[in-house]
Length: 456
Image (cartoon, rainbow, N blue to C red; front, side, top):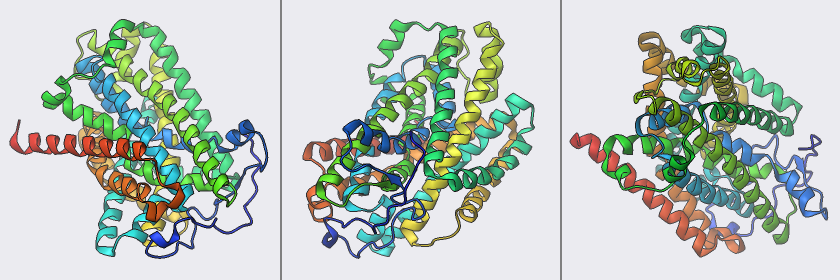
């Protein structure tokens, strides 16, 4: 990715369907980096694609955060390769939904938070804002615990101290943003490369049953019938299709300085969709690797209750016969935590500015959000240690899954509305696929709540 960036001197591109919104949206999303990545007009397809590569990988970070590790480890150790099908289906859902996010951000010139504010009355928009903040806090909680555990595994730093150290990551974000948004993206991509390399080595050491791996990608009705399996499946779904990613992606696509014409925007939608699709395929590979590693090591050896990251770290060396395995695990975990720091910061800024139009310094907003997440994380790690942290990680992912309908339904409605999207309205087949995704998520969530209430 080239590092040079040029601030787009033009104002927000003219929106094709302005009359479909309650009020004009004059303030761009992420104003400090809006249109800051130069797209060469008249350049080749590949040159333009390179300019658009980046936002998809920031979005992909949310699909492999520390919370996802806990759910994938628990699912792989308890049910073997069976939940690989959930990871695959979740990834397909993610590709569909993220393509709608790119369409909304480019075609309507709004991120999802701004669209909700402009389309709904306050009594609807404010609860949606609250749900979005809860989702971001759950994401932040998972990142805090995962980073603290990573610091503990690699450097022996106590969990309580590690939780407090994560509050300092705001300075990392500020330093990267000061260099330019391309450097933020380069930092994330570099860490993703480290994570992929770590898991490639661990999978090679684990030598899984590849026939069982392939069969694991075929769905089974047992996932719905078994409440324990459904709980973990929803955790994987919440860790894969994350609510804050829908807000994040619809804002990040506007960092590109594409032209104002219909042809320019159609090309921007296409290139942004390619970017996110490639990135999410990488995310699926890493997600599946975590589950495969757990199935090939823990489940195969009869360890069916491995959800805590530190326990997984301790068991890897004797099971894989290599002292490098736990170190690679810790490095990948720490990289995931650092990457999640970047995306949580940006999504929090987009949500706060978009819903309630309050613009405060990113470092202040980050400290406020981090303080909200640090309190429960610190209490759990102090009183219950790593075991409680692992359970809290899984719970945070289920909370994210329960928040999904409040982000998915507005997204599908907006992008399927010609009044709001004009010529950029989503094709009917895409809207139908997204609607099916929304229905599946809502039905599974209702089933989970019913089982919980009835004790089934």
